[in-house]
Amino acid sequence: MTTTRPDHETVRGAIALATRAPSVHNTQPWRWLLGDSTVHLMADWRRHLPVTDPDGRDLLISCGAALHHLRVGLAALGWAGEVHRIPNPADPTHLAALEPRPHVPSEEDIALAAAIPQRRTDRRSFTSWAVPSGHLELMMRRASRAGALLVPVTDARVRNHLVRAIAEAATRQEAGPEYGAELAAWTGRSSVAGDGVLAASSPGQPGFRGDTRMRTFPRGTLIESTVDKYEDDAGELLLLATPDDDPRSRLRAGEAASAVLLTATDLRLAGCPLSQALEVADIRAAIQDLVLDGAAVPQLILRIGWAPTSAEPLPQSPRRALGEVIGALE
Image 1: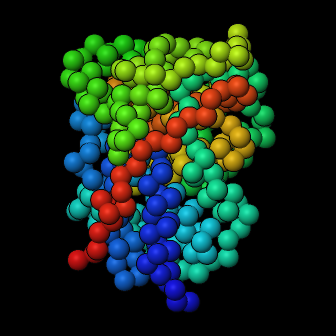
Image 2: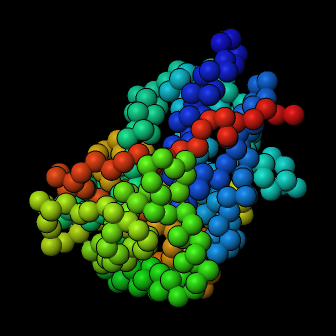
């Protein structure tokens, strides 16, 4: 390591943390190219889900989450980074270029980095314990700092609009055989898989968590807690939004999603991204009008709450080997 740039192993260590980012169906649609003094995030469009994610929003949000994970990992290792997002608009695969520079890690840097290997997507029921307002405010501040607006949907009427939209999107998607085939190809995976959604991470029974319909994954084997049972699931629905809807905005939304989910993990909260309602164009437009009054563009819904104390630990999602996702800049 020099005083001006991190050594190879430091960068690989940060990328190892970055690959733990959440992605749609755990497709991990990213590659990293290493230059002499830069790290480049590239979209891997071969991992695009054309039926589930027709306009590529989920892919860009997934890559944005990986970019934030990388920055968190580098910061904890003593390196900040100047980020150039969408550095070459003519190349839709080149999403970001990062130039590391020396940095003194803060307590927040270390806490968020420590949360990366602990974070899981928890699709199970949450408890009836409310999420404290201070926790929500902290997540909102960190989302804002990452470049997005986080809106807790607490008004009963507005929440009703949102959960109905989520259910309608699920009904429509599940009616299409192409959607079912794509979902089956990426889910129900065994523990030896390198990507996709594990069967052990997906509930065996589809349905609602509180008032919120969840995406149905085939061949799921995850069981709900049989000890703690709560009549009311107090999971919060948080809507991430951006002022615009260009690739840079979608990347920023992913960075903010990472900031929120890592903050939630550090606070011992459980979290689950919900993208289904925003994958159907007219439903997404309705959510923009009914929830955001047309003032911002919805990018992702996050469900946050307290997992039951008796809930079994979730398995770690599989990840591709670093050799598959790291290359040299030519």
